[in-house]
Length: 217
Image 1 (cartoon, rainbow, N blue to C red):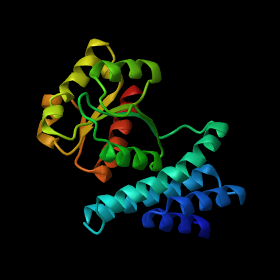
Image 2 (cartoon, rainbow, N blue to C red):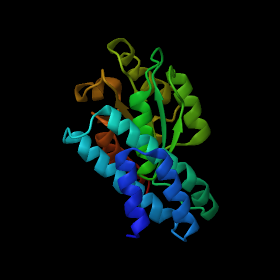
Image 3 (cartoon, one colour):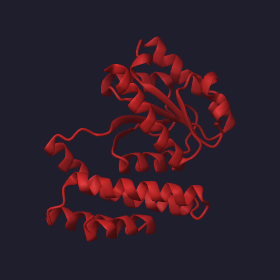
Image 4 (tube, rainbow, N blue to C red):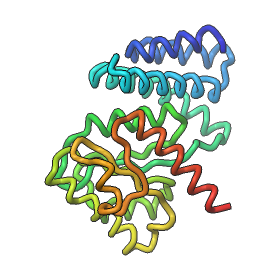
């Protein structure tokens, strides 16, 4: 790996978004391909997730790293589009209806981008019908719904129900997560996967996309 890309990984792990953007611009100017840069960002994403799971990093460090990843990815995406390079998958993400918490969602979204996914962020307070309408418009591989509090987690089955009612449930995988969500809620929510934290969400998303695309062959 080129020295500047190793430096990019270190900078993302340190959570310095300005320097991450600068290194990315310099790498592009010096001939690094968008894929090489995205691979470096993906490596940083994996390392950040491991540091978090090992309890060496906590939410502030994870959030700073996610912002640094986003700064780099935002510069690379236009280059990928020019080259018509397909993303690893497309994820439609949002916080469920009645819930305005977004820090966790934003971290997952940034780390998904760093891992090579195209992320469409619907923001917060998103109803099941809004998820379904956007699925029909954008055709993602995964719908990812977050719920922070116990009362709003009750909205998770609404998303699966709206997708089913729209006749598109089989076209996408449904991933759930958030502070009030646990693995025991998978069947109840009608979901295909659960991410306990950002690192696990990325791993599950990769598996869900592989499963979806394998089933379509």
